[in-house]
Image 1 (cartoon, rainbow, N blue to C red):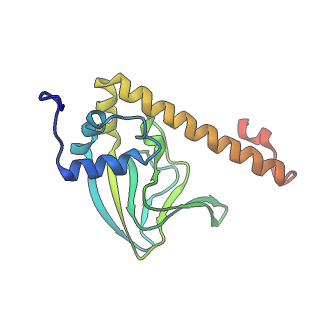
Image 2 (image 1 turned 60 degrees about the vertical axis):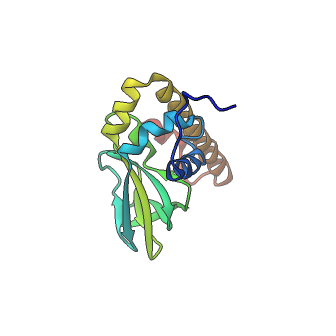
Image 3 (image 1 turned 180 degrees about the vertical axis):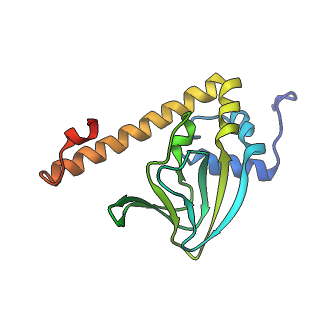
Length: 171
């Protein structure tokens, strides 16, 4: 029997919760926690070769990919090197979950068009300030994400030993 006091969600909300639940930073959240983000979400369309943000920009939003392909690059001297490509159901701009951070990579649209959901940093911080459980769940996901990135970095370093020094990371 259904609880008469539990909230019922629209089909559109349930579809969005299903989408969010597949994204690393939202996977631990319950529907009522994900609901807090709905008013802050902005749907935005981008076209091929449009830059979403540049490295060193302030981290002002988290981006969720609804459609299209985005490439994340780092600038090395006068060129850009691809870190990886993202598609539907993935997120980028994750350091916007942190306060006072800057982008570490450039995000560029590589498909003919892309639809992104943009969640502004200030809205995320307001949700975190009033919901410590949501913040804890999302920060745990962020820590796991960064840990996995470190694992890949160190694996790559071991496989290409001699091309750079890890000591440079701390200088």
